[in-house]
Length: 169
Image 1 (cartoon, rainbow, N blue to C red):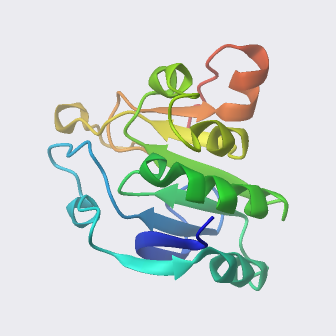
Image 2: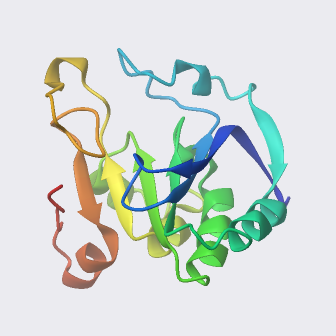
Image 3: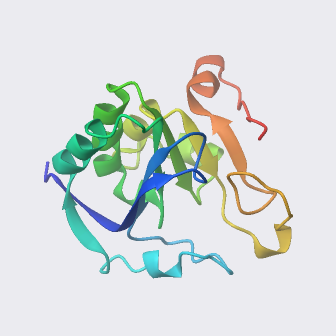
């Protein structure tokens, strides 16, 4: 596998994209084009910059303050194989991994075997913040999500129990 990933950017230390101090990788490329998206620059698959995934992982290892890593976007599922590789390596460091996507958990499960890397990515993340951003469902005080239709899902527990376990923040 090519060891490069196309990113729109990196937040080296963030407190707003999941609990604790996190490294955030913003995927380049998104098909959802949600009205009111605050990351419109991440939609074009041809923009962004190529980064070596192993160097990104080494840089995470060098920062002991990090409690987790978040994949945001764009939509990381559009580069699922690459994010799955990173998630597997990062999870071996004992860090918590969150992933944002415009796809619903149900849609992901239905297409797990049709989309390259989706199964591997899902198996190596802890939390999925899912669903398209809906501008008419904004509500003050939402934590870790943009609109009320989005869910914050405990992936490991959901896969184990075969029920969607929604976390309340």
